[in-house]
Image 1 (cartoon, rainbow, N blue to C red):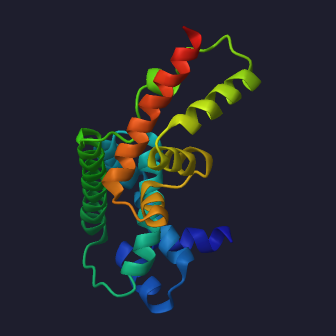
Image 2: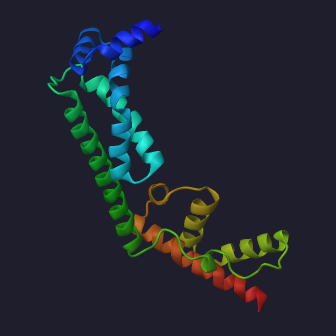
Image 3: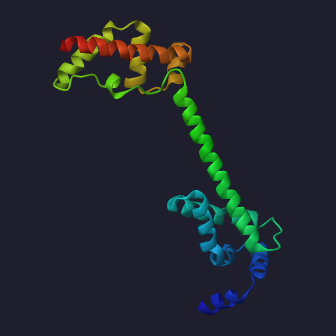
Length: 195
């Protein structure tokens, strides 16, 4: 086995690439990729600035090469690999920026998805769980019908806004509004017990 490895070490990039394209033998691609894996990792680390992300990118690139090299004509492997690696990293960064932008846009929307801890957990730390359940149920019963239904479906049945909208035949913006207003009314009701 060591003799075969030594023989492959003597082969040029072009010879290994040609052999891989003819046979599809992934071991040959592994030998070729191994020569430049440290360079690929370095480029990924330079762009992604995170070791785990860079390691993941190296593995993704190896898988990508296995597919692409069977159909691509590559004259000079090392510079081609550098460009593919750089482009892969840039696409990942672009994807991350798009996700961050979408997240920021979502956070800026009129009705936030999650409210503050103070709204979600009103002061009542000294209540026993049974007492809290009774008060919560009494306050839930005081809510308007749509507010109560939306809150029960969202928190107890763990349905998303769209599912609640579909179940109750209510516009999704109204669902968000009913949940937000219902939580505010619940908070006021529960706080009135502690006064």
